[in-house]
Image (tube, rainbow, N blue to C red; front, side, top):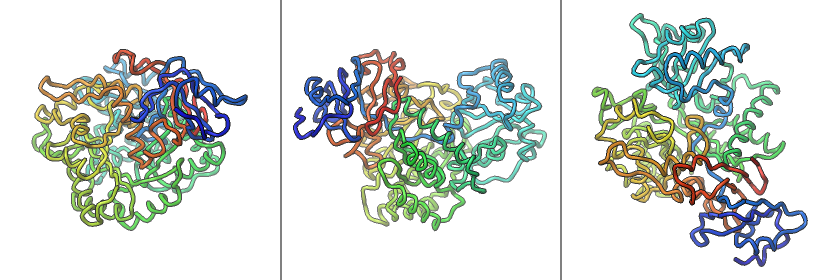
Length: 558
């Protein structure tokens, strides 16, 4: 390594580390030097220490890995930050445990208009499906709702259903359902956003969900005090990301309001993460509304704030709202109902692509994945082939015929290592039975897609799964097939790191500026508590992000 031409002393150096640069030309080294928000040198400790001046901050990595800042390629910043204050129900099983958790939490929030729980398993009561009657036994006199980890199903008690005006049901759009009981009243299970939106609105947190629920702006616009409170929620989310080594966020819901809040924080004290916020196109919108998407992308186009377009095509497997090519294994008369017809999506993809905007589409079932790829192919035929890097989000099931199309069309496979049932927090049932053994070989098929030439990018989908990229890396490395005959979909540590860094940068057209540690790149890096490549794979979850640096500034220090 030569440091000639590096100019004056570094602002900050990191020494005594296992530096995994993710740069094929210089894969591993000992130290890094940073100045004016950029990396000016990587090399031996002796060479980097030559750049140490009287004011240089020195960080001793103590033998831990030093890696590029993690790029979270699919998450929900605003709502996730708000949920940090909700009742966390992950890992709770059985009626008594659920009763205790809710009963202990309720008195701690005496003034809450609505009590909200998060992360409850679909199988919290074993084979019995949760109803409002179960929740009424626990909390009859205060409105309560709890969400499944995937945020596509919620369960409400009678008080909440009454107050939201949906106890007697309501007509909803495609793919949404208020499950009705034999008594002609809502049973308590609410599938998808239109169904549970009226209940969540009672919590007074509707602004944090607008980017998901409507893609629109607050109406009425918040007061200065409300806006300040929303900025504080965003700050809490950004700090939570920095604490886990994240330096870039590709947010998957959005509106102009979220961008404005982040821009206000940037002006006040600077941002601790770089953030992409999309325009969220919903199925009740018309194509002329894409003008707003173009305006958002034009107004916010910096290394700190930028945009794209997000769309939902289907729901999730566990509530039979994902769209399949062949019927569900446990529901042979049902393939799911798409949020757009295939033809509507083709028109949409052509229109967005024509504006030069990137598209990311939630597509969980193999039917949804196929329809979205068809839309991208139609856009190429209509507008000419360009480096669009359109994305398919989740891809929990796909087909042999569609696997090669990702590479052929230049489409990014955006996938989540915590999501396969049994890989981390999600139980095997009901998902694996819903998919059925015939489709298991192409379920959560990261390795199959990567081997077929696709760019596979990793993320958590926080708050659906824990945000920590370290946990995602372990889940990817330890991934086991559900049947011995199924292909191995696991990744190596180095491949998993690349999916959280190099590929994340590629997904936002920034591979020339971030995702690796090399001179001239953004000074976004993380010091880990151990050498992640040397540790037993079963122990990776013990590794911590000790120090996070974004744009040359320390944004988190353990």
